[in-house]
Structure formats: C-alpha cells, structure tokens
Image (cartoon, rainbow, N blue to C red; front, top):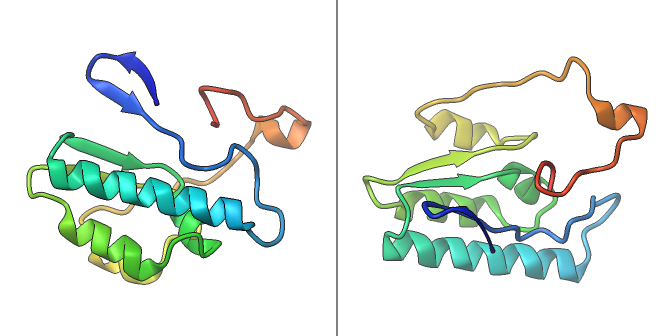
Length: 122
C-alpha cells in the first residue's frame, strides 16, 4: 500500500509484470487477494471513490470472473463511486454502466521501448 496524500490510498494487486500467454497461479492468487481486499473495503465503507484500474484485463485473462466483478459492483454502497478501467470491457458490464468512455491510443512511448515506470504504469 502506498500513501501519497492522506486521503488517497493506492494498492497494486497485480504482480507488476505483463501476462504474455496464460496467467500463472501466482497471477490468479494475486488478483483474488486484491478482489477480497476491495470487497472488504467496500463493505466497511472506507472510501467514497474506488478505482479498479485495468480490472477488465483481469477479467479478460480470467484472473477473476465476470460474475465476481458483477457481485463486486452490486455490493457497492450507494454513496461510493466506482470507476472500472481497461481494454476488453465485457459488453454486459458496459450495458449496465452509468457511463462508458472509450480511449483510443494515438501514440504510446511503450512502442519505442520505454519500459513501464513505477508510479505511472505500475
């Protein structure tokens, strides 16, 4: 867990690497641990805003199921805002969402060999 400002908590549940082919057991375990922490935080009402960055990639690689994501969304307390990001968003989640935005990459430094940077991409 990283504390940047007293009101903001950042936690990374991925392993800090890209999944190239199939996820490993460690990838799945890390995602499931993160899912449980987020569930607990939602149930405890700790945050007004929860951002699940790249959650759709976790669903795409089957680190968590769409049913688990749907359950997480449905248990969200009413005053809490939830933002879900990532490529490959399931259509059924987009259909149920209040707001959907699509971003399109025009240019990315990663294609020029720049590695992921701590605090930015992970």
